[in-house]
Amino acid sequence: MMNSENILDRFKRIRNYSENLCRPLKTEDYVAQPITETSPPKWNLGHTTWFFETFILKKHKENYLLYNEDYPLLFNSYYNFEGDRISRHKRGDLTRPTVEEVYAYRSFVDQEMMAFIQSGISAEVELLLELGLQHEQQHQELFWTDLKYTFGLHPLFPKYEGPFPFSGHTYFKDKMGFVKMDEGIYEIGHKSDGFCYDNELGVHKVYLHEYQIADRLVTNAEYLEFMNDGGYQNFDLWHDEGWQWVNQENISAPHHWHNIDGKWMNYSLTGLQPLNPNQLVTHISYYEAFAFARWKGMRLPTEFEWEAASSKFEWGKRWEWTESAYLPYPGYKRAEGAVGEYNGKFMVNQKVLRGASVYTSPGHSRYTYRNFFHPWARWQFSGIRLAK
Image 1 (tube, rainbow, N blue to C red):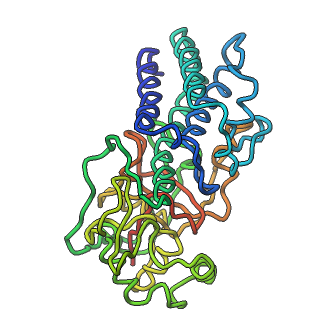
Image 2: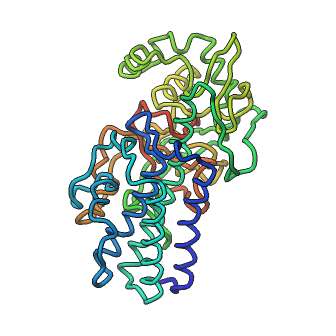
Image 3: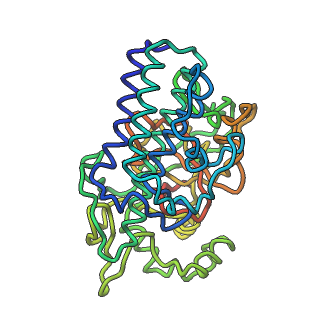
């Protein structure tokens, strides 16, 4: 166990980081929700606070009284064990509580949590606290993805008027190389004593045939070649479901790309900029990643191939689509109660992404981390790594 001083410092640092991300926003920015999959910043601030109040203070701090009896209805996300909640697509309808009131809620819960930590907490509570902090870091990355999606729909393409958590963008000019991996048995899953989510357990062995995996991700220039060669018009490159998606949604380029007067532009949180050909392509769906790989005469790696080779290439710039369905590992055991709803009930109809992105919070990435989204999802900072 960590001592209470170290836990307290970590708690304050992560909680403050969320609020610092929001400081450049205007009040109006806090409530917009253009699609069901994104959540407004105000709701994220309230939800991450509700998590600590519900799973730690309410259940483990003697005589604790909820800050507001109505807030669980508003800020519960998908925990059926914790009662009723508003529908996900209605989070942007919450004009009340006000932004000021949500910050007051955070302040109250933080003070209660810090006092509780200083009084000494059990090993069980410490595990819940770490889960809550990891959960908040997930929402810090979602802050960026959701805000970019919202700003990217605005006709004036507004900028985020604050510091970014990384220095500049990543550019690649070198020719793509490939790491050769031998046929054999590889051990998969989280092995260290550090934190992991239950979907990274249990450790098991997989047999992999000899394969090669790219030493870098696909760039805008390489993806543009696919587009110029009719990639979005060639049904033979796509899964049937992906081809239906392309036609029904009129997809012809990665999300946030705009063809203006015959010139490709790309929206980022620094504003609308000319497309940089050497920047890593991002905001790509699994359907698009699969079609691009097929066009190249290659494929996407499985999550097991990715993990086995992950020490041999740089990762962490984009979440990387894999060819693996999101399924439980052998021996996976779902926790009882609400905590068990965190990952297990989503193991259907989704694809695994590996790695991290430049917007992932510090200390939140590891090579066994399993992210997961539906194949059509594009608002996340997702990219493409090829295999063959």
